[in-house]
Amino acid sequence: MKHYLAFDIGGTQIKYGIVTENGDILSHFMMDTAAHLGGQAIIEKVIAAGKTMVANYSLSGIAISTAGQVNFHTGTIVAAGETIPHYTGIDIKKLVSEALGLPVEVRNDVDCAALGEMWLGHHDSRNFITLTVGTGIGGAIVIDGKMYSGHSFSAGEWGYMLVDGEPFEKNASVSGLIHFANHYKEERPWTGKEIFDLYDQGDQEIQKAVRQFYRYLSIGISNLIYIFNPEKVIIGGGVTARGERFLQEVQAEINNYLLPSFQKNTEIALAKLSNHAGMIGAVSHFLRMR
Image 1 (cartoon, helix red, strand yellow):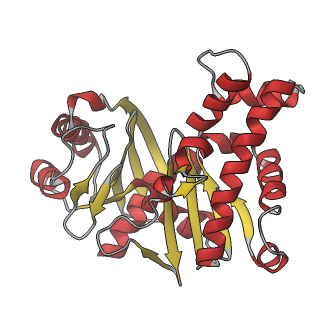
Image 2: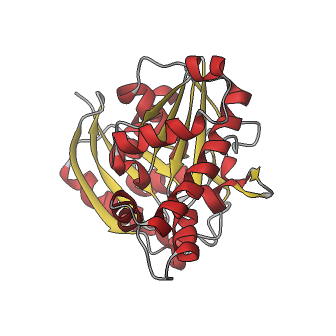
């Protein structure tokens, strides 16, 4: 049984651990990204953690999932947002491979999450799109069992598409949900869980906020269904901790915008791999590249 060291580099945390060739997680750890220090510092943290893991495990390679747009052929960051400064242009594959002496593969984090779902979560699906709903909104596209990344590795960036003249992720992310809560109720440092707890308790102002959030999220998802005609839309991210209630609520709202034939032929589903999707998907990508 071959073992791989997997990293999932996010704007806030870096998850890492040992994953088998079957996708089983044998151990997992977490450390702060300290993104404000910049891309080079992040890779130095990855290498430092990797040296410890390489010393303690017999490994066949290193699989990396990361925020940013990634040329997965070269393992280079081709573009990155403001969350991680000075990340664009960093050759992760070369730097990590040379430092740790093992083969390395790198891919965008939302792409990796989709690959993980296709491998071990929703493995019966060959045509689907994913949305990760967190601080922003990320996306990935699977067509006939293959990831579609676009000609410059940025397909699925639908957080930037316009809904009612504003970026989709401005109103349909957890950040958007908090914005609506601040608008309809008192301004405070809300969490998504606090908002939904009050929603379930029947708080009238919060119910207005959640309805606005669901409206924008559902319009965006409906537009994507009309464009891609996927068999499934898989939704992940912290907001899905609500589980089946979230699924039922967003499905009911989406039905307000979808024609019956699309409602019938498109399943809305929750991601199954939760916090480990990035690491598992990174290993899936590594195996696909070999």
